Each structure stands twice: as C-alpha cells, then as structure tokens.
Image: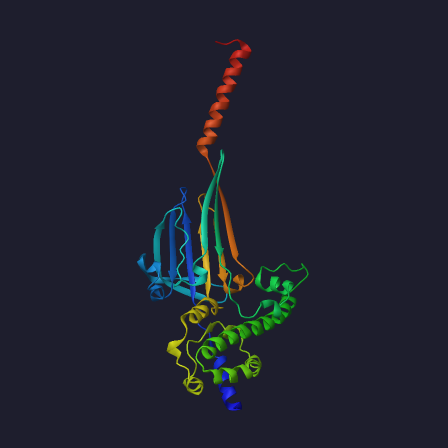
Length: 321
C-alpha cells in the first residue's frame, strides 16, 4: 500500500512548465469603434475560437516582446475591425485572460472630449482551497498587487520578503492542484470501495505531495496525463475525464501564461498592462485608461463668439454704428 501511495503521490505532483504568451492591441477610434490585433507564437492555439475567423497574417521575422519573466517571439497576428459594442469577446475556448468585459465610452466637455477604456478580467472561481488559509490579507496585497514598500528598502529586503511569501504561495497553489486532481482523477472514476480507501488516505497523499514541492517556475501548467503506471494502478481511463474538470485546469493552471494588453485611445494616449493569473486570485482585475482630446472647433467657435461680443460691446460703448 505504501508503494502505491507513493506512486499516486508522484502522479499528483506531475507539473510541467509550458508558458504561453499573448499580445493584445486595442486601437480605439473617436467613434468608439476600432481594431483589435492579437499576436501569438502559434496560430493553431486559436483553432475553434472566434479569432480563427479573423484576418490572419504571418509575421515573417516575428516580433519580440518582453513578458517580464521571459522574452517571446510572436509570429502570427489576428486582426478584426470591431464596432463600439463589440470589444467584449467571450468564448469558453478562450483563456480566461483573453475574455475580459471591455467597454469604451466618451464624454463631451465642450473644449475637450474624454475617452475611457475599461476592461474587467474575471477572477478565478471555484478555487478548492481559500488563499486565506496560507496568506493573510496584507500578504496577499503584497504578493498579488503592486508593491508599496518603504523608501529605505533595498533589493535584499524585498527579496527576503517575497521569498517568504512565495513559499506560502507555492504551498497554497500545490494544495489547490492536489484537491482538484484528487477529485478529477480519482473521485469520478472509482467504485465505492476504492473511493472509501482513497478518502481514508486523502490526508496521507496530500502530505506526501506537499512535502516535495516544485519550484514556482515548474508549477505553471498541469500536465495532461499521469504516468501510465499510475493509471494502471488506479484503474482510471484518462479519456473519460469529466470535461468540466479539464476546463478548470485550462482556466486556472496557467501560472506562466501572460497577456501583454495594450490600449491606444484617441489623442495619442497609450498604455500597456501585464495580465497574469496572480492578478485574478483576489477578485476581478480592472484596468482603466482615460484620454482627453481638444475640440478645436469648440475653441474656434468660442473665440469667434467672444470676438463678436467684444466688437458689439465696443460699438455700443463708443457709439459706433
């Protein structure tokens, strides 16, 4: 039994690093329509998605982008003109970080027109283990949000703090993966006797997994298969894996996936944001960008009216007809 538990624990700890990066560029016009361009390294990743119907262009030499953790070359571009109410593209086949709720709006202020772009990225849901079991609210804020450190902190201070938080984070995420894997690969495909036995040894399996944690860079994407030996011992047919559980892995086990989200608004205002899984753990992640455009016609009309009033006042003041 001990050997079987070790084999199952090893299977549960099978992680692989498989980073996937994307670049999204939203260019908004004054009428609030515009163009979205999605840059990817592998165009086949979007087969069966709405982007597959967009205009695809192969980039001969590719374009290199910095995703902070690594640099990656984008080799294909998907482009599409979008109406003002068509910026939100939600499809179950798309990664969570590529389906925010996007709204664009403009507000007339006579001399200027303000344009606002808002994108709300949905938070991770159905996490099997609350992050609060491992990280306090303050620690979550430090790890998942932009750091606001004292001015006298140096690199060594920051490294020590983040190293401590990162260790807790790895334990929490590994615990999440264990619970989902346990549920998906065992609870669904075992008879009552096997289920009772696995339930009895649930904590033992979890402790075996948690005692041998990988580096954070190696827990990014859940491997799609267990070793054949583990399947044979458990008597589980991977091909019958419940689709909803597989979708959970696709949505949440992508810690190395990053999206460089770039926005261009009228008036030349541009910004870019790095969207990653960590930003979605605490709740919805919202980005907002404003731009103001000077209404030259309003300036000219105002000056014309003022000039007319001055002339009219002068004529009355000095009796000029």
